[in-house]
Length: 373
Picture 1: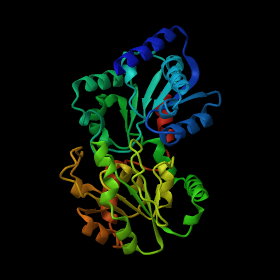
Picture 2 (picture 1 turned 120 degrees about the vertical axis):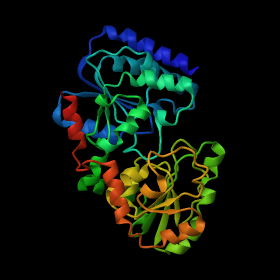
Picture 3 (picture 1 turned 60 degrees about the vertical axis):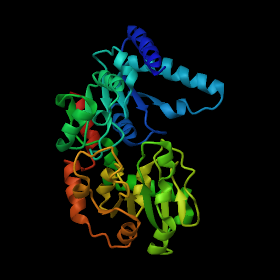
Picture 4 (picture 1 turned 90 degrees about the vertical axis):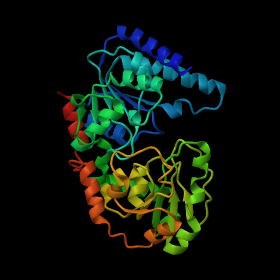
């Protein structure tokens, strides 16, 4: 069924190639989550600054297919399979933050630059073709990624991993840094994020905040059981009354398993995770790539790897020796780790140096400059 959708998308795209490419038409496609933020937002900002005549078309996959009514589904399908391919076929730039498999059957103009920014920074756990074993899916991904003209990454050290994950040759991979990380050196952006959070949660002002961001597991059942392994009451007792625990589960899975109370909030639906990074005092995660951005803030991190042996996603480098914080393998070690002062600056710095060449807040500018060549 998906294959039929790919061909329908490409059919409309290829027909619309009869129209000329529209100068400075820019497509922003969010195929990963909701809203306009991260890499896509930062590229919109830099183009608005440098190209006043640029006009943007925003497409958010989750919003297009979010409606429950039949009419909503029809409208969403029409927007995805007709409106979006028309605009992409006539755009000068197409910015993606996830794979767009229908591209594999499309014949874009040589004037169109198709840019993959991805939705994660650096390379920590394996992703993309590094983990995909389904040969049919692999072929679809390879065919789609052949159409990419640019793939931007955070450092020279991670280029080999992106070559493997996307099957994109090194000459089309640029270690400029990624625009989404620019906000970490921008005090006004950080302050805006803090203000957005406390506008929504004014009752948390003055509290110390622990952010828990576990990654997804293989099955629905495993994801539903994740919070059962995280001893919220014991952690709060260990840290004290001044602390509140924020739980952000992976957006792909339901979050109603989080038991909220006065010291535990479910923030899974909070739209911009960087805001949560700014306001938190401690990150607890497992195998989530959230550590790649969080390490830019030089705050304590605890890795709760209670199922490390069973977690088969794989990592590009040894997990135990390269993660930027203490690794807790069980509940007892977790409670000990969150109660420590977390002087793990050397581990954080080593991880930072591996993931980033130059996190100076100018990645969007460098991406823009590359695209002008």
